[in-house]
Every structure is written in structure tokens, then in C-alpha cells.
Length: 394
Image 1 (tube, rainbow, N blue to C red):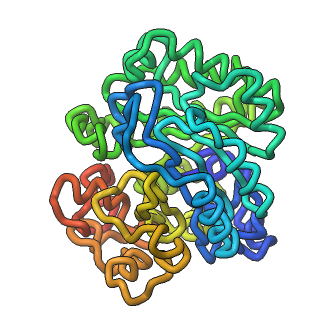
Image 2: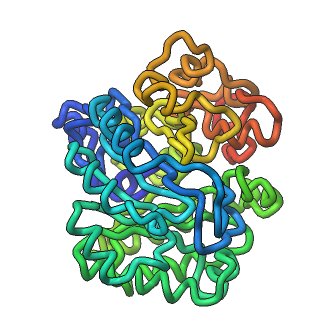
Image 3: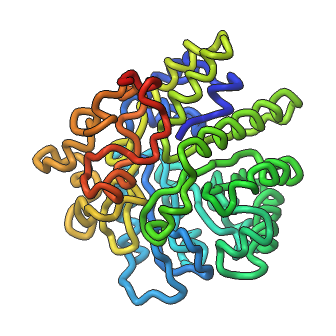
């Protein structure tokens, strides 16, 4: 994640995470990306079932799944292990996590173990009762996916009315006192929707938004030709930066992040240098603390059947299954060469990535995208839009 508002608008200084010792267990949520120990934020896809049919779903969610899911008791055992291991956040995802009847029970258990419980949802099923229950059990954040305004979003979701239902879910969460954010996956079909999404944030007083770059996995593998060109990506990142700064200057302080393309970090820094922004050196310090792509290190995934992955998008390589070994043992297994390499990807990446002067800031970008195009786990990320000159090889 690249915190556009944190970095460009100066809502976070390098001294802020240092003040907490940069340990995951001590950092507030908005500073976790700057931790030094990189205890994993764990995405748990608690179900594959979903009431929608999103065309870019990385999990290939289905309306009715016959696949075995971890039971409530198996979930408790997972949460016990994660809490003892020091995982600071458990993100309940799916499919659609709200279709699982024990969601609030699991979230309550996680909070009781000292973890932050957050949810990634399409928002359509969060009625007032559910919102109140989520608040009661201690859910601190709900990220709701919108990929455009009404017509475009409903096309992506495969259901008419999904946009209005999601807005109601947002309202219900806010009325219950739960922090709400948006999740937006950028592609050719919705790139013109971004200004309207910023307007919606202001209208609904939504505090946070994550703009995801497209990852070619799951049903998203069929959308490679829908990804933005490098030049379009540059313009989109500039648009996001400009819109964030405009809100900030008008006293509308929102948390804006871009996700899944760590080239955004150097790009932002180089822009600040061109603008002679006095905070440029401060931003570079924070980017180095962030460390770039953290798949298999600072973020991990447990699937509905207990399989462990380096992140929620990269499902070609299982690291193990928690029904056979606890997550903590799988994650810390120094005898597994693949897991060991994931902890320091910078040594193994190839192509432009291996010679890039921003490797310490980016860590080779997104491995799932690199492998999906080249077939090589360590192949360069085709979505890196920095020029050869910008990365120091021109």
C-alpha cells in the first residue's frame, strides 16, 4: 500500500512510527505499513460463497459452494495461533464474508485475543442489525467494494441494484459508528469513474479509499487487456494525487491509498522532486520503511479450506494448510526454500526489477502479476510504468 494522503499531504511523518518503536503490536492501524518486524496482516477468506458475481474476482467466488470451509472451532484455533504469533490484524474476506453465519462470533473471538478485526465486503447484505452486531463485537473497519457509480458498478457486480444496496450498507455502518472505506479496482471500463468516486466520498463523508491496480488472478486473469497502459496509469496516479491534495487543501482530510503497484512510491517521490516539494526526503524515508511488496512477509492469506498463500491474489503456490500445521509454523519455516525466498524477494527478482535503483523501495513489485504474464515467479512485473531512465537503467 502507498499512502498518498500520508506521504503527499504530510499526514504522517517518519518520526511517527519511530515513536512507537515500529513494532506491529504497538503501532496504530494507520502506521502498520511502516513496521520493522512485518508481522503479517492476515486475510482470511472465510467462505467462497458470494451473492454477487464480480467479473474481476480473484477468488472466483460462487453463489453456492460445495467446498469444505474451516469450521467455527477450526477458525478459533487459527485465531488463537495468529494472536500468539503476533498478527496485528485479521481481515475477514470471501467470497462475501457476511454470508457466513458465524462471522460476528469469529470477529468477536479475534478482538478478544487482542487482534484488530476488519472486514472486506460488497456491502449489499449489511443491514442495520448486522452493522450494530459488527460494532458490538468490536469490528473496527469495513472496506466496501465499489468499482464505479451505479451503472458501471452494477455491471461489474453482475447485479442490478448492487450500488444502491452497497450505499445503504455504508450508511448502516456509519450510523453504527464503524469506520468505513471504499475499495476500487482500476481498469479501462471504470477509469472515468474516479472523479465521481471522490465526489461520493465527500458526499457520504467516507473516511478512506483504496485504489487497487488490477491483478491478473482469478477471474481477473481474463481482464489483462482491460488493464491501463503505462501512460494511462501515470495519468491515473497523478489524478489520484491531485484529487487527494485538493480535498486536503479544502479541509477534507481523507485517507487515500493505492494498492498492488509499488511503482507508485518512486513515482510519487520523483513527482515531489520535480515540484521541489520540501517533504520529498521525508517521503523517501517513509517509503523505505514501508519496504514495498510484502507478500509472504507482512501480508498473508488463509483460504476457506485452510490453505495458506503469500497473499490473497497469488493462489498458484500453497505454502501449507493450517489443518496440518499451524499458520505460525508454516510462515516461519526456514527449511522451505520458497518461503525463505519470499522473505527477501529483492535477491531473486529478474529483468528490469533486478537492476532497478528503487528495489529497496518496491521489492520487485507484484509477483502474482509477474508470474501470470511470464510464467516465472521472479519475472519482472509488467505493470511497472516507470521508464528506464527513472529506474536508472536508461
